[in-house]
Image (cartoon, rainbow, N blue to C red; front, side, top):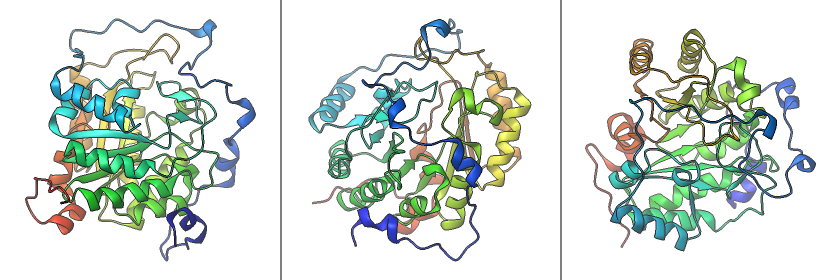
Length: 353
């Protein structure tokens, strides 16, 4: 059976899973008639524009440069691929690419949701590109990556949310570059167990879904998202396959309190999340959600210590931390799936002959 048909044939697994309520499903729907005619990165109206705050001295972002960066940039364009590293202007782009980690943006480069912090284009998406998984896998092979992160825009016009393409690319990367670990940073699929199971059956080393902010700010920060869907996605992932590491992230500086952040962290642990990333929100432009404040290095250290105390296996907490930061190290230290596939102490990827 083809993966494209798998969504409609998947049966409920014989375990107790979290099911998103109908009230949560009713709060958000795909409304094509509300999409802008031309995809746009703008997230706020001209009346609410605000200039980004001046960055403090402890936040220094270096522009990516060098031969390796330029070579990989050319490779991405030649294969008609998108990386979230570039689309979201990640501050760690140069470091990650240089160390053998890259994050690929799949399902196109136009998102159906309007998260106010995000610099990826929003609008009506094009047709699904079923050749995208093969191109990503071949790019991973050409780059000789140690760790590939696969993420996507939201595709709310599809019942499966694009889940089959995640499964396709996981399996194809393992065929063309054995030893390369794989992390998928997935949408919430509106809490769909069926869509999530398609991805989990392919057994990525890490299943990541970012909560992003505290429940009180959800409708301001990510108006089409739902805290209940995030809870269902992460808790069900752990129930479907306990050996797959689960991961989530939080942004700071949007108006949340430390107590609210710590409560989200407690919730994430209760959902079985193994790895947590905490970073500072950096406003992409004046047409994005305004930042309330910068957190200090001491506050990031406090949250890391708190996270380890409540049971996370790994916490990255620093202003410039993003989802894929130090991801390869996380896999080699923690992943049962990776050890079963490639043995203890495996670090070197072996290219398909």
